[in-house]
Amino acid sequence: MRVLLASPESKVWTSRKHIPLGLGYLAAVLRENGHHVGLYDAAIEDEPLATVVQRGGYELLAISAVTPLIVDAWTMAKAGQRLGMTTLLGGPHLTLMPEESIGPEHPEVDYVIKGEAEESIVELVDTLEGRGAMEAVHGLYWRRNGAMVVNAPARLTPDLDAIPYPAHDLYKIGRYANLQPLTDGLDKKARAYTIMTSRGCPYKCTYCSKPITGNTWRPRSVENVIGEWRWLVKDLRATEIGLTDDIWNLKLDRAKALCRAIIAEGLNTVPWVTVHGMKVNHTDAELFQLMKAAGCKRVGFGVESGDPHILRDVIKKGQTVDMARDAFRWARDAGLQTMGFFIFGMPEENAEAMEKTIRLALELDPDLANFMLATPYPGTEMYDVIKQHGNIFANEWQDYAIHSDKARFSMPGYDPDLAVRKWKEAYRRFYLYRPRRVWEKVTHKSFWTELPSTVDNAMRFFLPGKAVA
Ligand code: B12
Ligand code: SF4
Image 1: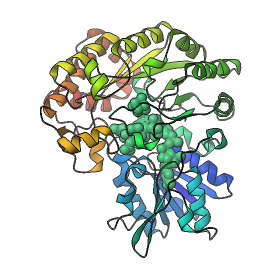
Image 2: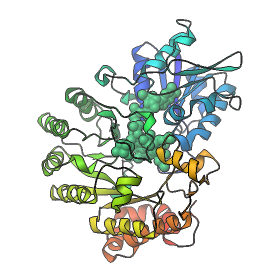
Image 3: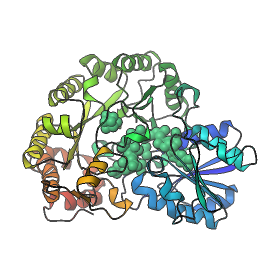
Image 4: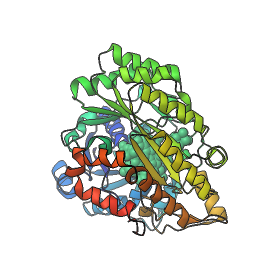
């Protein structure tokens, strides 16, 4: 079958330019099973969907969506159906809320697959070609005579080494941005790939969409990861690699073994970064030294809060402020750049707790500080608690975008406006009120090359009264 795997273009943010890794995995298994696949990432394409579909003769449109993109995914499915295609939706939002998209309001969606889909998508495509019964496709939500049918769930793939590498060769890699342009400036010639060395995470942070990968942690073997890394460096000429694991350093010995293997194989010539934050409490000084020797350039850490009560009892992060201090010190001593991720406005947070977070950010002083407003995504413990005791302001799924203040909430004893004020104050105190930071910024080439977006961000964060769009 001719399958077009697609990601919709976001109308709610402009900065995302990473390869859609999940679609690369699905492309690889479909290709391995003899199907013809194309990739259409609307964020980087210069041709309309219809042109690509007609030229490629695609029959199935398989669309991926995170929560803020689901409305764009429905729009894309409508376009696919108008072109006579069968439509399938999957990805994080569909894993959390599969019924919504197969309900009567969405006739443009023919099928939904919940969960990791390497096995299910092949089962579905084979069935659409007349081999197999629809009832036997794992994780499938579909309609029979207008009524929803829910099949037996798909399993979380236990042996990740058995899955082929993502079809990295299909990405139009020259069109994606480097991984964190905020610290490097936008590199138009970047060939930035991402790689996932493990899936899942055993922690239970209350703001994290846990049902997507469950509480399991499934590592790939070091040899398997190195094979993909070699492909990226030697054959695909990557200029940058980003680790996207939820928690690649859960097992310290494995993380160190991976670094040693990168060094031994001579693959440390291409810089790499941890896109998703590392967990501070599974680190030591030696890990960072090995990472540096293995070519790592920058590490990100989910610090989240400077308040011990919020960390321990509200977001259940399983780490302390002192652990964050240690990790930053070790990383910096090893010569790595650092990024810190901080969240404002979790339930129970008051001015004092948020002030502690701002002070911790100033103390840790990462090269890049990313302050986020707590967002109650469906499938999180936070969402359930707020639904039970409070009220979420968001009207539509697009409101759940990063740096939007639309997905705020109210709860007894909680002030949503205070959270927004402290969040913006954090940006001002970190980036604007310290002469060294301002000097660093204006002397960096990207400040001038990206002046329009810099001005836009300044309007959003540095003018106290300005609404954040
Ligand atoms: C790295 C990462 C990022 C990076 C890079 C994203 C990228 N596009 O590469 C950055 C920092 C930019 C980022 C941004 C955001 N992220 Co993010 N991110 C991740 C992370 C840690 C890994 C993503 C990844 O590489 N997955 C690897 C592949 C193999 O998994 P996958 O994409 O889910 O694909 C599998 C299945 O979902 C399914 N599938 C996927 N697509 C399709 C399509 C079809 C048709 C079918 C049948 C199946 C299917 O099959 C795939 C193979 O098994 C995940 C957590 C996680 N464990 O997945 C969070 C995660 C996806 N992110 C999340 C969020 C909220 C966001 C943001 C919306 C944040 C924001 N507020 O703006 C943005 C959205 C950006 C975007 N358009 O994707 C949430 C999504 C929750 C939700 N309700 O949708 C997650 C799950 C984190 C969490 N645990 O809460 N993210
Ligand atoms: S450590 Fe990260 S991936 Fe794991 S539960 Fe917490 S936020 Fe989610």
